Length: 296
Image (cartoon, rainbow, N blue to C red; front, side, top):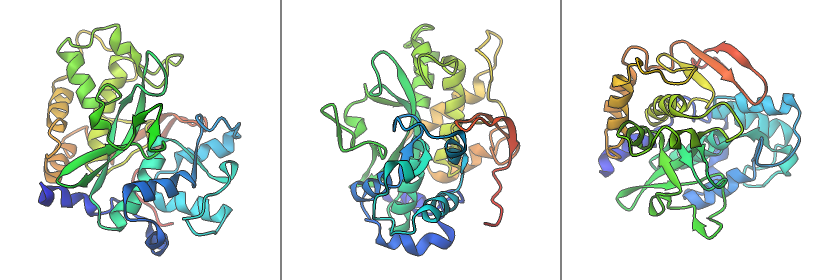
């Protein structure tokens, strides 16, 4: 298992810190220390309850860790171990807390990857979309929330596997829905929020493809859409065979990264082709983008 996990020590193109790599030397080499530093660098565009301007909220569209670090350091060039004031931090979301933590852990040789799914601990009666860290330690993959403190409402945020009623991957939710263990009403309780139109079967289906991309090392934005993703509710004649196969593959926590890359390369699944921002916190709507890195 350790040999398979070692593939996630390598930085992805997205988590690579680029010219800022030397600054990661000062960050702790363990999850708790690294994520604690990251929480001092990022403010969630909603959860912080700070009324950021649309221009500041658009920071969440930054894809690459190198660009995120550039924004942080242009505003305050203090060491990354020093927390910024919340209003001065990079404005992002769970994906950004995770991406920066991944960059730090990988920099120190710790196998780490992002897991896309849904969390029940942000509000009663709804599973909110959420990205967490999965790092390899003591012979197993550990799921932990980089955005939140170690304990929330008496629950351990550092080993989410111990409380499966709190966090489930998109593939797990999708396969339960397909098997009838989650019904047509319950699936509507999975999405971006109970008062938003982004929820339900189509949304969970899309997140299975996001989960594949993240695990394979293409840690996209949560509002990126491509290939076979849907922008409307499921229909009876929709073909889900491909997504079912992806979800079944992702259930195996020890699946080799090479297998994920081969799957991602199949027609329509690779986000490095044509990608569109569906609707971002900064207001970008139906905007074609490229996930090919350009020189900073």
